[in-house]
Image (cartoon, rainbow over all chains, first blue to last red; front, side):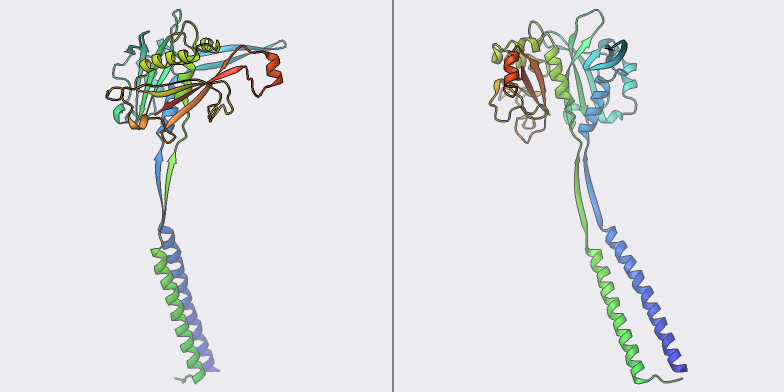
Length: 168
Length: 187
């Protein structure tokens, strides 16, 4: 009886010893497997920045667009609805302080923006800041665009202008 | 010290060898698991909002600096379409000298948010940017040349035209009482 009890104990210790080793190796194996999984992301987000910045400048009445209102009549009720004509810009709002407020939060090293007024022969006159806004070199930028826009001044005929934007 | 019986020794030895074998299997799986590399490459492209195309085309159509009167009104007259398109092209080329674009006027538009008319069956007139081959100022760089692989924005503008409402009711598929200006802008 005594010997059987001793052998049983030895077996239990042996089982326990290897069980612990197996569990440790198993855990390490899973960990090693997970550590070797790699994901390389190549982000091309210039389209996103291009869309957001151009919409911010040309489609927001907080920036350069003019807020207009239409009145809808439903029976005796009248509803006033505000809207913005995208691409139609108030020329008087093209000022350094307004533009800088509009661009707050955007990194200067990721964009370059310029506004031009077009003469009838197509000649350009840069508006406000002669160097534009932002530090990106348009020659080497990933995304570049020229928007034909309307420049409105109260009491004067609408002129054409160009909004030029380059994204790093 | 009590000596083990033969069967007990055999059992212990079998247990030990079995354990070593299992240890070897697990250890080798650990070794090979380390060799397994999962590498995934993801190219994430932000979708194009096509704002450049829509704003430019809208401004062209609303402007009275291309013709005597609004561009959309002039085109809706439905006469000298090719000549009018070339006038728009010539003026726009001066206004936007670094942009490469094509303008196409269609009688019909099957997919307003995409390609109006892939086969070009209902094409009325077309005009694209002209560049002089040996002039570095005007030669089209490769990335601006028109091809299906080039990066571009595409947009459409509906122009109302005079049409017979009876005809429209009878055959709405064929007569939409509109013509469509499609712009393609390379970038």
